[in-house]
Image (tube, rainbow, N blue to C red; front, side):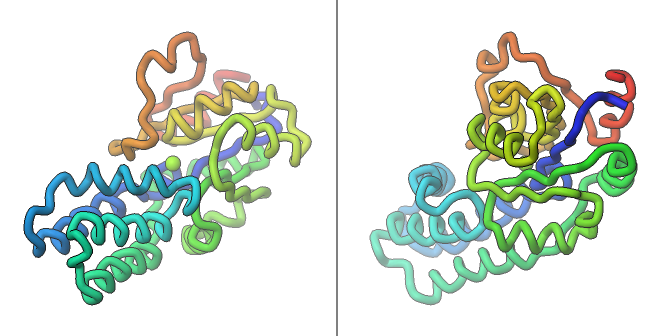
Length: 233
Ligand SMILES: [Mg+2]
């Protein structure tokens, strides 16, 4: 058994599918705006609005929905109707209510890991939505600690480790995002394993040179995690 006192797992696109919901919502958003004249570069404008709003709304579906509404008003020059706004709100509600689909291998891997290590779920986003997803995932009993944070930077990881009395050398983070689950963990002195998801939100991308000299595990699937841990010990 590798010498980790905690294995922390990201949730969205690490345990359950998430990014496809956002992609599908953006497709429907484009259809709604397509009824108005001269509306183009929708994705780019939406991303600009989201980025600008992150610091006030935080991550998650609710902030995303407000950003869609704001983008719709901007791009249509105020012509979007009340009914159009309602459709956008419904998009957000559908996302919040959509079923939780676990990634391949998650159920058995999380079950097996929980026999050997204390597991921490460490995710950012809307508190209520993440709690609901965890409850619906059926995985809740395998985690001894749940941390839902507003952002994942080195300070966040340091305070999580401090809160749970874990030395950084005994902390492993596993997740799909280099920006949120890998680089800040290394900066905080911990160990990271990257398990990429097929699609990635542009906001989570990092340039390849930001990875130069950084040492972390690259796993193809969460199924590879127990074997990698065995090899470490
Ligand atoms: Mg993720």
